[in-house]
Length: 528
Ligand code: G4P
Image (cartoon, rainbow, N blue to C red; front, side):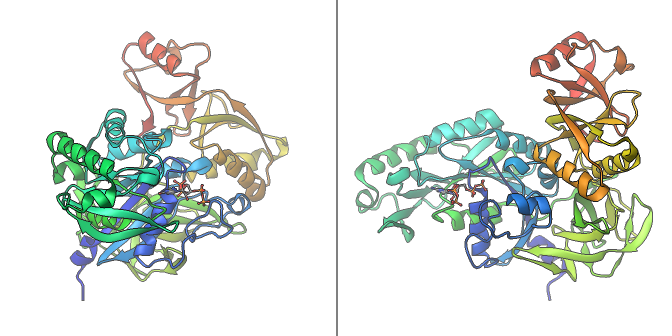
């Protein structure tokens, strides 16, 4: 029988981040196929296929054929128990995407080899850096025309400010893609196109093998020799500490669609990523191997059952073992309880869990007790994890109710939806709740919000888009925020914890405010 320590040590919990279309879904699917968690390609796709793999709870989600909320998938591979946290991309990009990263112990960054680092990757990358979690880079679509690999590494280093360590190196690209040279084993894994279908050749060849020029072509052969010489002289040394503290990103080249380089990547990734990391609670580290159970809430999925306003709250287990029906303590509510219907996602299915360990994610039915960032633990443990930061929204609208008779429902709906963390609400100083400014990270959240106000609270709202693009929490030595010198198109607002913030229409205005107000600090996330 495996011990608690062994169970926890074999767990790996990570998120895959990318800009839309870089290949996150394809890579996830290939990883699940290796783990035997799914039996057919296309099962993970929520976007274009009619079939939904995991989360198809929300009506809006079904209507639009997209997955609004992030989910988690667990599978086994060669003794490891893997939890992949799915981060919503595209239009459904929301604060949930950021929060999911707070529950991960590592991130895989998928980059399209023809495009390099793109906008959404940058944003998500910032959250990974803030947490110092290891970041692995998978440069995808090598079977298509790609940018020069040295340029890609340079761009990652320059734009994202992280050093890179190439684990393998591509030989050609597009029609001329012949495989990769593994810089660690010093072997070539060749890629062959046979009769239109691509297959991965199992033959590993050494670069000194005389048959190599025939295999990869004369030009590729010469280029590879040149690249290896350059890499041997100039690339970063392998440094596990630097990798695990998020200062050095191991880089792999491959092609998720043709399944090239995915399995070697998975194997090396599992060797280099750490088991569940310790988390800070009350300023002290809680070890995952501590026998007493503890977890925190990182996501709330509302609208499970309209009639009852049921929601599913997702917990990341931080220490010990969870057992079904065990008594737990909800720190923020100061209450002992049993968690109702604990469940876990196993790729295509949702299953009730009898036990789960540090590193795992479980969902529990919640009648409205929990908030994002809450701690749940064994009654004798009494820890309180540091909250999840609030990330700056990027789209803003003024919201009012259409019907003044519905004022009460309006306030209730707005407050509850904000408390779940689906939207952020702000108001002008000293103004009531007749009218609020709603901020969201992804525009689709506006639609989700309106839909929920209509169906759950029976309130029609009027939405007037605002041209603000940036919001910053006010920090530093500011005693009277209303006395700040700000441009006429900058607005002072308060959040529902009464913290002061500034809404800006441009980055220029942000710089202007900083210049004109000595001691002012502007923060793009709030720790409270
Ligand atoms: P995302 O989740 O990051 O948004 O990307 P996704 O995996 O959906 O991939 C986006 C598109 O890129 C898909 O094509 C997918 O088949 C393709 N793709 C992913 N990996 C590779 C690769 O290694 N090589 C090549 N050539 N293409 C790749 P699509 O036409 O938009 O969708 P679909 O019709 O295949 O579903």
